[in-house]
Length: 584
Image (cartoon, rainbow, N blue to C red):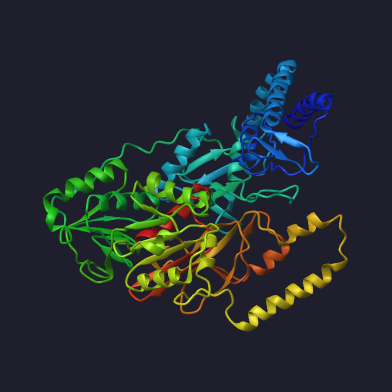
């Protein structure tokens, strides 16, 4: 009925446009798949969503000469939008009963007969507590119901991490989301493991499942399971005072919330270390990345240390583990150089001068909203005339800006002296094949020659292709946005706190062969798990290449994030990965 009503409204518009002799077109290029649009989001919430748009934007100004030599004015564009707006109101008013009846039916049908394959989504209780709370907050915002079940039930379910079915046992602390609820469609859209695309002519991301975006161990079942509504996280209680004058306070590094705690501690000038190896102390095991706040590192504010740690971790509801000794049962002791002191990041981020406003906005939001951590904003030209010495972190966002050869040499020398460069997405190409940087597209010259030969062969084969199918043919080399499962070396600091895999949102065809003399931390293997649409030519080329890498450079480093982990600011697990790049 939503689709049918769109047609009714469209025909009503056409009546007025025909009368005025105005051109229009429909059903050609607008995407109606990804749920974050101003038309799809209302549709998945039972409404009728449509996009009306006339080209021009800032380029159009007050008037623009079109290719038919007529002039399109701002006045014209306003008239066209006003007409569609009033026409929408008119069509809605004339069909008010149909609208309201079907709006009600949408929710009652959804609750009784969910449309999607999967009827129950299980988020396991052994996920980090802060991640579960973050998911619950998200669900609450969207009024999606969730709850619990009794322990002991065994079901067959799809495992998001492997894309295979397995038998799992449920417990009463698992967070369960049933599709039998009024917002069933939105629920299934957000949690569907692999979205089905009717038409691959699309220009935006085609996979976005929340368990992958949030880094949650999750399962989906085709079975209907009775759910007791509500999930009680309990009142947070700090245990910092449990051991007065503790030798050290430990915080597990397992989510973005851990990075928020580190950010707040560093703003209070608290010295923090992180473990580069696993260890065990006082009957509990800790993974690499664990934060250590010790009295030994904080003598200058030893008396206030406990209250500072308690206040910050209580506000962020972060569990802390006080210990009475630095002597570990296994792994390095707290005085070991394997417990590495974290330098407080002093960050430069580029903006303006053809830096992508999207990429900069994602970074700005991460620092100012997620971490509430300060950063300095420079234009690319500032790199030529200002000194880098007082800073230790330089972030290169995506964009069309260029860096002079002398600027790149300056950055290279600064990194060798202890600075850290983080290049994101397309910005990595600015360092490709540059002196001092070991980023190469091809592992060897023969690989470059092979790709060139394949491209020439493909061009030869395409010479007799039909003109009519040119648009369809182009998608064979397209990557509008899909999820790839990476293998992660979680013994490296860039992947601390993560499992041995990471689901990356890949939105470009950019690829690099496994890099030489560099830590290939996150990479695509021979047979990657892929979710969403990828053109078959691109998919074939995406095997065996690096996505996240770190180059040790003198006393500093260069972090290559070939996929943007902060894309649109909603990939929570990507924010956690980026926190490793910033702090470790």
